[in-house]
Length: 107
Image (cartoon, rainbow, N blue to C red; front, side):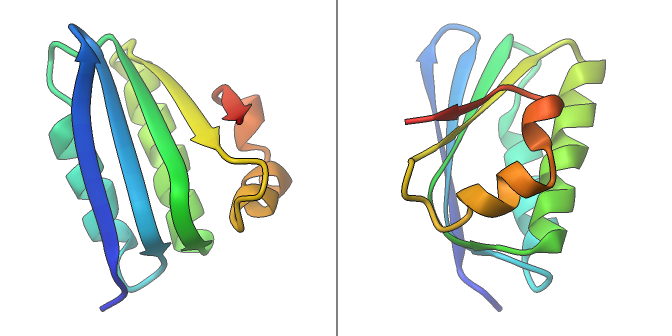
């Protein structure tokens, strides 16, 4: 299985920061997606998804991001994706138009 880590912290009440690192691909995208969703409690008003630690994100990982965005929209929870300028997955995120669905902040 491809390695990915998912870590979360509550930056302030209702604001959850989730960092995903490693590789998200067909082998583990479902696991990563479920892990992220499990971390989002009913108290969450906003989620910042930090993808700065990702080395690889394939189409299964992209699908997981859109699924998460749709779920959080239904729950009325704000989502923001954060990527470093030099991230190897930045181009993929931009090409699929994720920024048209949720705010993508390049840092």
